[in-house]
Image 1: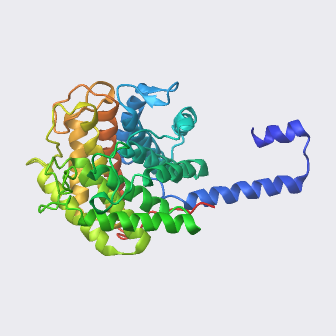
Image 2: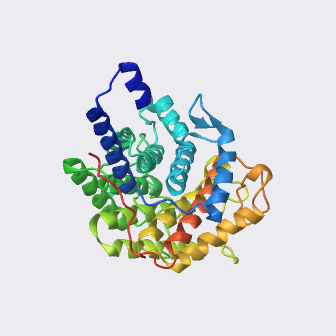
Image 3: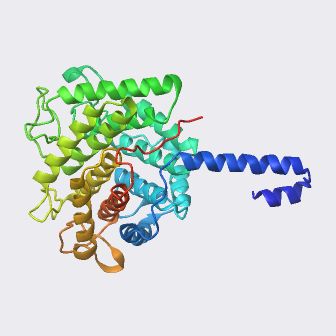
Length: 387
């Protein structure tokens, strides 16, 4: 209820109360402003392109389910992350109602299912929503999801969490997400909860770095075989990405810059090995990547951007801008739809391919500001701990 209507209806005329309410609102606004990086200038071309792409993305949004048609459950978590990231970077509140609706429609399930990696995507999505809104219910949901995921840890293969609750496969993506969620929650919580989150993040990285999933090319294979050894399966782009975001967050938590150096090693290897001669990112499944693979590249560039925010390299900016420009010029269809193959030609789009491309546009927009003259190259994105 608007405060002016409240005062009118309730007959409140006490000026001191009004001043107190105004002070509270001003204090809340200041606190929220400190909780996230400043918005990007509206003139940012990449941000404008992302805005156009999001309008198209939202044509697939179903308010009744709180999800996006043409794609799946975990992909919808990434679509929501894109809405939150765009809202934070642009300063727009246009899509906050959709974020809230997805939470309200699906919250009864706790965003839990059989797959620990699915749960990890939703935990990160609600962290992104919290960073924009400072609404503690989103942070609480992420923490509850993480508590369920942490139950997937056991001593098989020396540690790590399972891919799903059948406990038959330990893979890279579930454990990378576990690291990222833990490290990001540690930056936003306090007291015993913060200490537990940070301990989990450190424990996960200690295990993951020794697991053998990082191969001799400094790329990450899909997972471990039944003998707890690297299974040699595909080095998907998203496996090279999520680890970057997790290490960037853990580095900020601990001040350990060796973590950022490890992230840079993986990032530069991924750029070298997964890009074509023109610097455009590809996954080996292209042009037919099924329901999941269409999402992978956006996850890589989103997390590359997260690493670039604190520890930027010129190569990151050049890579992100090259891919963003190609998406707009060579992979854009009717009504600013974006297809799977960023080098073109445009292929029929869906909500997952749209989300993936928008991730790249947003990362390029952020990099253009991060590398601008006078910007502090080692500044961290600010977060506010939960009160």
